[in-house]
Image (cartoon, rainbow, N blue to C red; front, top):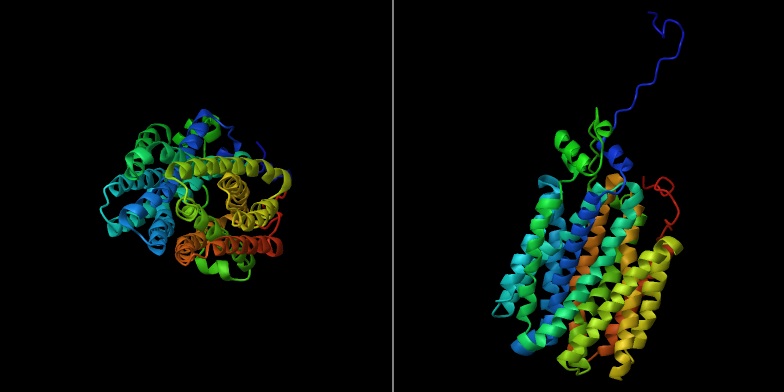
Length: 453
């Protein structure tokens, strides 16, 4: 038999071996994908619930322990400081021990610590427990995002992450409902007892959530990765002669402040910092503001915040629809731009009848802006620096979210109530300015076009 090369014929091109990533890209959404998405969404909702119950407990805690506004603000922010630390710690842990282990660990951690918090006897015990609880809460969003992105192909990844973003205010809504129904009868501690419930989600994780096939491949466990791919819907032909993905180069943080990425990092870290300052300062203080500044009863306060939570869910759902129709920047212009105007108007309302409408409009607007921060950030960086960029940008927001309740508490203690709304508006508008002058619209553009492949 003659040799094709000797006969002057072109050699046959070698057939590229499939990789874990290429197989994932070719899979359709299966029942296993849906189960993973539901579990991840439940984790985010529970994380949100545990984050917000402290704000609903604060009016009762303030009265029971006779706290001044600054101390109230410090207590409200201790969990956020813990979330800042947790965001830095849980990422490396999930890289070392796996996404599934990290996901389960954060849930068990904040569920157990929430139960202990129900028995706190003084300010110091409460503060320490909330800080440690926050360290577990802070790992949920980075790990759940990694879970979804590593199981899903490109066609489904964006919508899946956006779905998780939409679920966040559902936890706020659940916290508001539980506060209205239970706190007036049983006191604030019942909220933290309910915070133990997410621990049961771990049973569902063990049964329905396999380990990330991308993570398994990166650890040299290709056989286990193949098993997971088949659970996700891959056929024997799909995984025959499969090859591991090439390890991505790990990029140090210093790269983000070099010329290639500096402008985008200023944008993402900046809008997280300024937007979250106004957002968390108001959200964590809202029940206390209604109860102490406007002198509403506890039942009326929780009824109003329940309606505000419904408006928040509506805002996130609206953002989920408009982000692909009108782009990412419009979420900032509408959410934070008009949200700043709404904040200034809200501060002038004195009639309780109109107060709830103002709060609902404000919530509907700024929740769209917050949704924009999550969706936009990952699209602005290439994969080799994406995790680092998202982590550190989010951490900038955690810092401001921890500081703002203290600042707002100082305003309340000095009866500078309108300064709260002026500060909110200024912070929101700075985030809008960053989006306008530094932002690159990503709607309808591939990652290659954006320099983020």
